[in-house]
Length: 302
Image 1 (cartoon, rainbow, N blue to C red):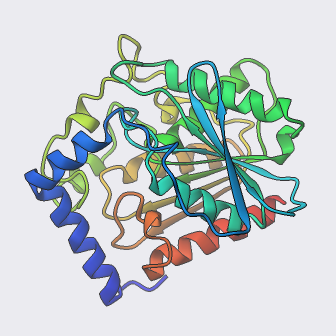
Image 2 (cartoon, helix red, strand yellow; image 1 turned 60 degrees about the horizontal axis):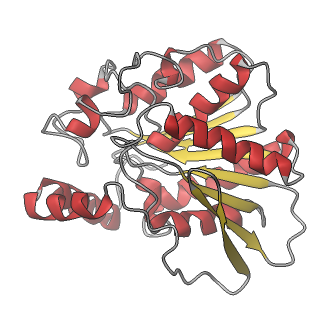
Image 3 (cartoon, rainbow, N blue to C red; image 1 turned 180 degrees about the vertical axis):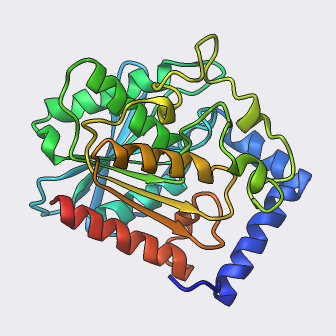
């Protein structure tokens, strides 16, 4: 990737910073996001895609299929939102991207329960139930790839820690975009990038520093903060992160620990990028490159 950001990337980064620094827009955004799901809102998928809502005991999922696809693969998408934000509409767009770069793979998007009403282990329990549902539909664990951004990326790793502790076999791979893996915020980047992070920087956000998800549990529990776990036996992982993120250390620590444990890790730090920049899709060179990298990673697993 080029060291210098393109003009378009600089503009988008500036807009992200302005959005998050404006109290008016931040309050409006937070009021719209927290706890309110958009899973069942209408979304115009391309004609070659079809979706259905699946009702589980405690949550719902959207299953997105590529019509006439013979792909044996399924990608289980776990959304971000700091464990307090429910499924948002833009994750439908990301599901479509996952299906496209996954060569027609089915995508199961999980609208898991969130805090403060549903603290740990609610999200993890829902992720386990979603994974078991996928297996019950006939997919083998070797055909399942976990994908998540921010809290969803951490939840994907927490799910694998939990499966391993129960002597269960793990899925084929993990795609983690800007994963939140340390809810204690102990990494160096929480200080080093405090002034430059356009999403979380310049304030001690309650989302990061006083998150309700752990509840009464120990936030160092690997099922909450996967960075504190043992990655021995984990499947191949793709970890993408922006260099300007306060959560940069979360990715660096996991990548180093996993590699030391013998896990195949593709770790890419995108210069000048912000938290979950991949959501920009094809609007920036960096986000386009990130999705190309996802395609390459999936092809390696396939």
